[in-house]
Image (tube, rainbow, N blue to C red; front, side, top):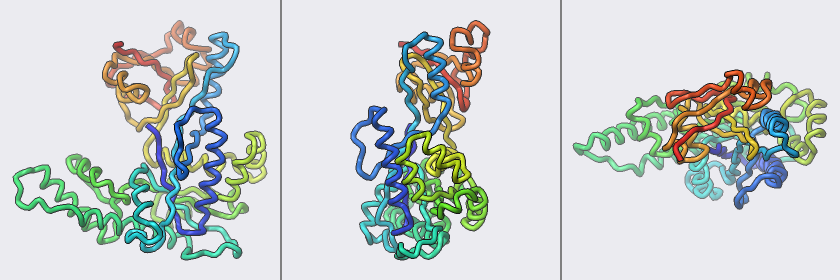
Length: 367
């Protein structure tokens, strides 16, 4: 599965600058990865993962290969959602078109203005919290319109239709009170009906504080303070400088490291957005490592072995027998699959095994 994040924000908050930085990263990435045609408003970037290079070096050495095997990281799609202004739910600023783009994403990243630049007119932007509330309100109003189009089944004997209508009414009452769909609790029986409505305020959110470069070194403190102000957890807030991200995107990896060090930070804002998106959505990665390729695969936490195998190939889930698994660090320290087997370090896991973060696996299946 690929993670898709919609980037939203009012005009002149730095959203386009951030997205252009993503596109620069994409251009460097695509040169080494076989993608199909990418839409102009979609930026596809790799999930930073130092484990892959280490595993590739181990595979090369243990297999006496002349070169590293191909390395394929997990990816994140960032979708540029333009035109979100007050009145977007009524079609203002091409709102209808871009609201439809949001519905196709897994999460929403709100870019809010927290930088000082008198040369950039705010155009509706007041302060970070108000900017966030303006966009959230438009999404909430659009969701209310969606709920308003649902038909009351009346006195139908169909219990599922009755249950669905109960979910619609529960959501309508919450949204009319200003509570987003993500804040509504559902029973297990209700959850499928809620998901089927595809409401935008049901999506997990991140808030990207676009700060001045001088504030980046205080990112953690800013995130913790803003999380309280916005009523979210710190993992949902990322302090970035879009201008700095644009400059970083044009540098080599070594130059990026030096630049970040000069700012007193270890990771770029884009890397931290990706990591926090994974955390917010409850995602993780497992790995495969062989002479053909070394690759990271994205799954939800608490995924059983057959479902994880199906991410590699759908037939693997249907014909699953078992999987060999080992922690990536253990595999590297041991020197490879052969040595790990000889030392009894490879675990044979069945259908009830829950795949762990950092597992390197080999799927056994019926042909």
